[in-house]
Amino acid sequence: MMKWSRGLLAPCIMLSLFACKRNQASDLDSANSYPFCTDKAIDPDGDGWGWENEKSCRVPTPCRSAASDPDGDGWGWENQRSCKVAARATATAAATGSDAYFQMERTALKSYAVGPIPNPSEISALVSSGFPKPDTDKERALRAHTTLMKWGQDAIAQAFLLRELTGSQQLNAARDLRNRLLRFVNFGENFGNRLDEANYGNLSLELIWFVGNMVRAAQILTDTSAALGNQANWTSQDRNLFSAWASRLASQYFELGVYPAGLSNRKASQLEVLMRIAVLKGDQETLRAHRNALETLILNAIDARGIVPEDSPRDKYHPQFFLAAALQALELGKQRGLPRLGPAAAQKLVTAIQYSAVTNTNAAAPAEFPKVQSTPPNFEIPFWYLVPIFHSDYGKELSPQIKQMVQENYKNASRFDFTMNWGFNAYAVKHRL
Image 1 (cartoon, rainbow, N blue to C red):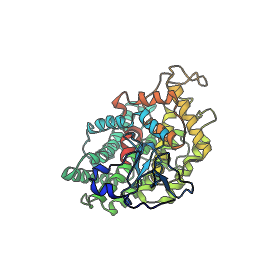
Image 2: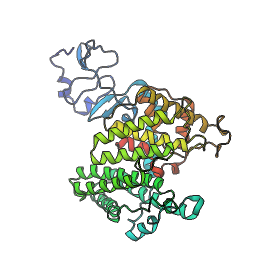
Image 3: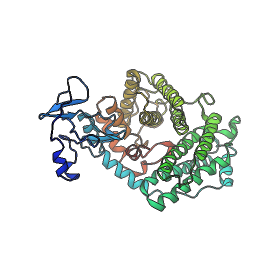
Image 4: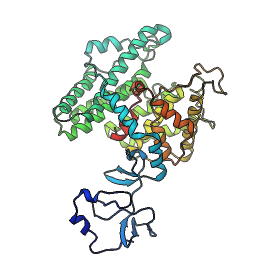
């Protein structure tokens, strides 16, 4: 369909680069200086070239996600090139206030106080005898949970904050993060005796969230170090040592075959973290296998009504744990080029999200579970920013209840946290972290 037109480049030769700024009607491609077609152009043979205004034009590549267009102008950036966001996706991004949410998260992130690197004796004192269950020793269980979560949050916050720093500040922060991660590697993987239920307690669940944040931080440090020319001293050997440490922890405490009795929310969290470990190791085959296991879990863990039978009867927040881990894992898989969910799994997830939105915008107990433990609406699980992106990816419309959940999720900045491995999704999506 391509047609050649003499003199097509003349206007841009005479004007400055900024005068040739791309817009929705005429977007000049930096590679070959042909304008992008508008929606009115024709490309009958589907070769990626159209004809409009007596000129050849390039048919724009569609964006995979509306999140690629944070300013809502209809154009995004994916895979090192411009892409066109569908009208529905653009409207979705505008409706959810993606850029405003990013700025809110960025402000909260920059106010986060990263703590000192724990010393080996501190780590040993916390984890060597395992975590008690709350009903056994509630005070120590809460203290242990808070401390381990803080260590994981410090690592991922420091990793995210690398995006906010430049020059020597960025370099020093990267070196500090390296030392933080390797401190745990050098400590080893003895985080309590998993065979002793009395000592082991709730540690497997805590470790899933902790390791997830640590591995994600290691991946960001790996990417940042490459850009810094490895001045941060985070070498491929460091990365291999860390990924081996994370793999041993997983195989010892929360690999699916080791801890098979978890509820659906725990299984989803396990798979998300195992996918992150596979990414860090560069193991695409294992990443794909865990992603396929997640799709199977979605099909089996959600019924036709959108109920998660292992979690929904308990309260209004445990099903959100399941959804949070699943959506973050799917976003990770999308970034790494994995295929989309099949129609059946996608529809089940959409139905579960809607059920969660309806029950959480209603102060009453769900009709199906009148004895649910907590009836008030629950807006504390910070993953709802990902919901409009997921719906856009699969061509689904947002319900009023889902829009309300997104808005409620951003009313309190304290909800932008890394507890349980979720939070700061607008920031992460924008920077592909």
